[in-house]
Length: 323
Image 1 (tube, rainbow, N blue to C red):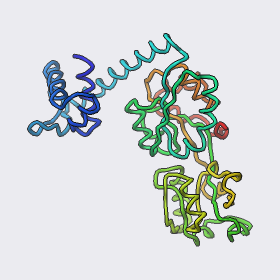
Image 2: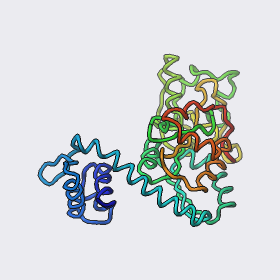
Image 3: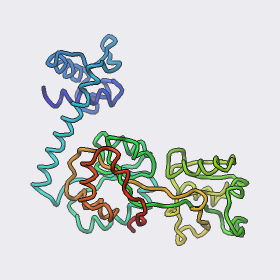
Image 4: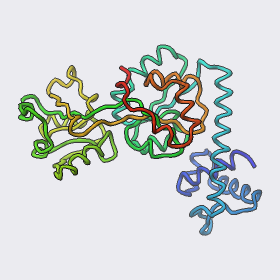
């Protein structure tokens, strides 16, 4: 048994049983992958995969049982390497952060700046994606830290900790009639075409729930992942925007005005997640605390050793993102 065999099994599942894609991921050939899997199956005395001819089509019941063990062995091997790196050289290394577009654009820059000032030997890699993609990057070991508002708390294999709470803002061109109203209401918003986030992004679920609760059908004419895109189309007069309040900058968005909408859509919680059971190097804890000062090393380590779901009980009355 060797790690290449274990990686071949894991990557086969991750790449939908496509041996060509597995071979590309492992920098080998499809016959080489097939041989590694067969040798492991022969050693264990079981078939891990269901086959149709030479193609893999799924996991057998024994395969479903051994796959978590394969994942743990590979995670432990990665932890061993990281532990060695940490004790050998604490000042140098790589830190991969996965975040949604809004977090990468508005919440992370200040923390990255301050972290770089104190950790010049650490190379940062910033990956952007949807909340589900952020979670997947963590689960597959492509990222050390994940930051998003949606989805992260839904994965038992992740430790998702609240960082800060935020609200939405309605943005309109200067001089818009909504600016003259004494109180912003859902009924007033529903009279205008709306531009906001895609489903599953940046608190969109709270927006939909608010309109549904009021039995209103909003006219969402355009949705996007990125608040900058939303603001661009609001400036063009295509509709009224609903974005995270941190995405509005009066100094930059001079053609727009913002209206606080927390009373309409409630508060949202952005979470920072790490993979349960992963070894985090010292500078990873340092970055987490720079980004969210409430998340000290002691707090994060405590959550990582707690049973799944326990970290969700942490308080959410937290400060705004690091700036």
